[in-house]
Length: 368
Image (cartoon, rainbow, N blue to C red):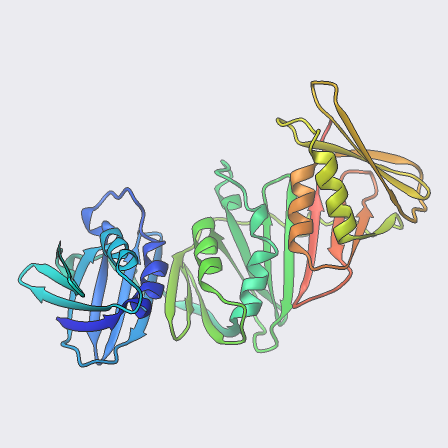
């Protein structure tokens, strides 16, 4: 194996692949990436046995085909450390790879490519195309509500649901729920899969806000996203996601419309004096005013008042301010609609301006 490539061309796919490789591995070869040169194309593959990432780049200069595994982070650190526009020359000599970069020379130990673990192919149920910007939007609008190491393991991932010419993402940690839906006319089928947190985070790193199409394959055990530059395959969480429809509040006439930026800034100011442990803020709805209050064990207090139109009876509920700010940081600028559920057991937030899709957020109150 022998090839030459410019530093910048190698650095982008290498950075994407290294992100998948864990710092601590059960198998030594998992610290390596599989480097393959074939027909003037360089491909890099990394895996942690849960997520598999392939980055590809075309080689301009003549290359000699071959395949070997190289220590991932050492190679990445070498590429980052050499000057910009440097040509990197790779030559496989016996069981070592020699990397020349200008006046620098590095020799890396390798492991056999035949020992590198691949994901087994699983039968695919549905395949569809979607733009990178749309898929990224679906993930961005909901990923923050994924549970963190919940004993209900199925909550530690995001639900992807195909149904009635729509693609929907849902995430919940039991205290809040985020849901985003876009139209997908090319698919008229039903399937639900649970994508683990790491798969979601890696896709968010890879996907760009453009109209380039990616192919998504939903299998029984894997989800695969393919573009011209990368292929990401993630194992799925084997479990049944809870019925999120039961969490959605029933229609209510207790509706308030607020400016996103005004509401967000007021919450941020009040949160300064909230309890560091509970991060609680009290929302009080009155006829023409929404009062935001917070206090802490040091007996410090903060209050903000916003003008609103509210037709219901006076009401006060406590919420985790971080949950509210997560929603306001995700929705586009403009007005935000807030619906108070009957029975006062939750509020529903949604943007009045639909961007690429429809997003809904349900937040449960807390006792302050």
